[in-house]
Structures are given as C-alpha cells and as structure tokens.
Image (cartoon, rainbow, N blue to C red; front, side):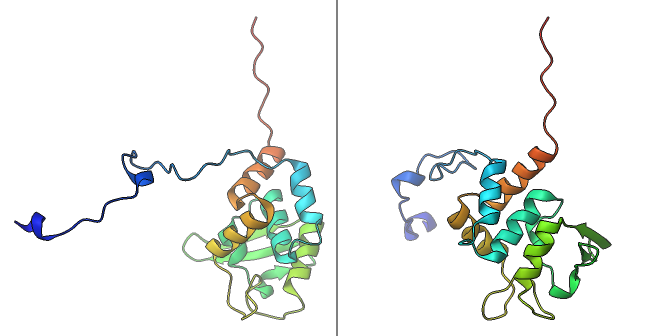
Length: 165
C-alpha cells in the first residue's frame, strides 16, 4: 500500500542500468601532464598567479591541495623557503619546503598582504578545494591530482622493466 502512494521519478536514460560506482557521464583519458605542459602553465602570464603558485607547489613537493589552501600569509617563511603547517589532528607542526620558483610565485600571490588566507577570493574569503579544482581544470585542462601525480612521477621515475632472457 505504501509503495503505491509514493511516486518515483524516472531516471534519465544515461543513469539507468549503470553499475554501482561507475560514472558513464565522465569521459576523460587520464593522461598526466608532461614536464613541458607544467612549465608552460607556470610561466604563462595569462594564468592567474595564485593558480600558477598552486601548480608549481603541487608539482614539486609533498604539498596537498588542502595543505596549500589552508595556508595563511603569516605561515610563509620566505627566507627559509618553507611554510609552516599546523594541523593539530594529524601533526603538531610540519615544514613544507618550496623551491625558489614556488617561493617567488607564493610571494607574488600573497600580493603584499600581511595576514589572512594566502589563497583567497576578492572578498577575502578563503578559496575552497572545489573552487580551485574547477578553476584549475578550466584553465589548465588538468586536475590538481593529475598535476601532483605528474610531479611525483617526474621526481620518482619507475624503474625499467627487467629484460627477458
């Protein structure tokens, strides 16, 4: 009796008969960006400086996107080229090193602010992960995960396959 009183909306054809956990509406080859792709993104003046700083930081080190977005301007130490991460849930203190290129981009991204979030909207509100991911994919064609994975792959190349005898 209860089943007949509730009406179900029919699902669109694209969503019918799909297996659990499979997204058929997303068609993307997971081609990682090359070193040349990443260098082009980081040096392109048309790309916003905050996005270039995030791309450079993701590609070169152990930074996660959430780590970068949690940074405040006061967390940066330009002299030692590192940021101080304080995540009480995981670790009391962790230093995140940066290269000279990333430090220069981070300094430019801070835009002379003395405090507050490093990566923020014009309103001063901290950028969220979804916003940055969407902007990065629209601007560069790659997700933060792909950029970080490409950087890791370039820093730690896979060993050559053993030769067959």
